[in-house]
Amino acid sequence: MKREVKTKANSPAAVLGSQESYRQLVDSVTDYAIIMLDQDGHVVSWNPGAERIQGYTKREIIGKHFERFYTTEDVRRGLPGQDLKNAAKIGRVESEVLRVRKDGTQFWANVILSPLRDQEGTVRGFAKATRDLTELKRAEETARLASTYNRSLIDATLDPLLTIGPDGKLMDVNGATEAVTGRTRQELIGTDFFDYFTEPERARAGYQQIFRDGSVRDYPLELRRSDGQVVSVLFNASVYRDEAGNVIGIVAVARDITERKQAEARIQQQSREIMELSTPVMHVWQGVVVAPLIGSLDSQRTQQFMERLLDRIVETNSPVALMDIMGVPAVDSQTAQHLIETVSAVRLLGAQVVMTGVRPAIAQTLVHLGIDLSGIITRSSLSAGLQVAFDILEMQVVPKDKRL
Image (cartoon, rainbow, N blue to C red; front, side, top):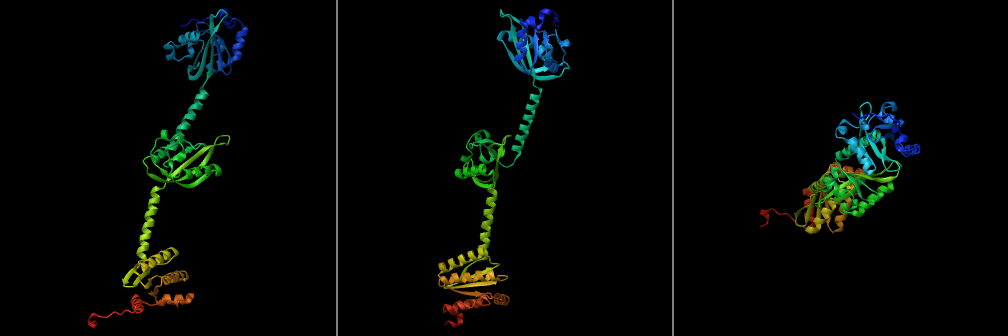
């Protein structure tokens, strides 16, 4: 055990050489527990801060060796003596270590140990200043856990998520961003956001819009992966601010819509194919084309039907077109107008139109709507319309046994 010293020679004034020096020491250190030690490490001074931090009263600790502030493992390793030797040798020892209170609990502390010398330079003792880092460590741990939690949330997001600085540089990305770009987080951070798109200027314009308006929604861009593959994305982004309300960057989420666009393209292709099947134009006889209509007519379908019919008339050089409406379930004023527009377009090519499949119900509807079809040849059946076409072409169908 270390001996206890209770002589006047070990008072602060004796150790330092003067009361003035002691006062200057106390005044020079703030927010610390200030402890005076003699040459061997016994406590000779104890301030209220030391009592609050370490738990000992002045009566309990004066004359005791300062090793009791160390953990059992540190004492076993001889660290108290080593610290005194190092302080005397190099002039100052500062460390962030675990220390022990009177009740045995441990706490993190910032400790500064400095030698005190007399006028001849002889070490007369040591000044030890301790600051309790418990709250700081707790705050650091809270911040670390919050950072880990936030990082987990970011990486758990299935869509690419990234933050961009005011200079356009990528500040952070999640795993989904790595996957969609084909690049690692280390490769992406610090690089220009705009460089990863097929249209960098369009990306830059969207970035500027975010700063101007505060956010963007469903902003379309095409991202080029590291392997050259192009990925279609929609960006939703907004600015984010510091505690003072200053804009410090942009947080953006990108939705990969490549599969959706491919599906839309397939649906459009299928729609075109279905439309073509529902609006066939057939060359049934030399100089005669037939265009049977099935289903309702709208502006889009009428336009496509008109284009196919006109192209086929020109392609086959047919002067007669039979437009069969037997498959049209009902005729209203809009449908009738579409039919009239088609007939007018065919006539501009110099061909004649025969409208077939005009059922009694449709005829009554057209009369009721006041639709004037007097300038159009109409027949109730396709066969009757074909006979009209033969008459126009001055052709006659003769049975084989009558040709001789």
